[in-house]
Length: 71
Ligand code: SF4
Ligand code: SF4
Image (cartoon, rainbow, N blue to C red; front, side):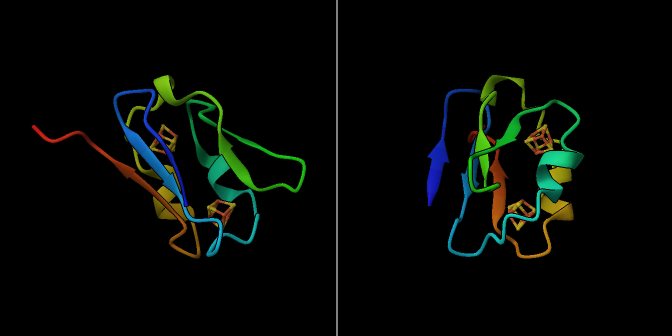
């Protein structure tokens, strides 16, 4: 599990569930995610995340989650 918390929203990637299909990277409108050498997503621009959840909704394996801070 990789947890990135540099931006407003916390992005959790579960590599054990991820199959490196790249859908989350392709659907993110903010280019928050990029691929590592093995095509797994990494959070490369956490500050740009707008919590639209396109990555979550398109992940077929429930391997990525974006969490808003507590109010
Ligand atoms: S919630 Fe939206 S902006 Fe944030 S990483 Fe996912 S697709 Fe990109
Ligand atoms: S959409 Fe899901 S399974 Fe595909 S690369 Fe992203 S986190 Fe991994």
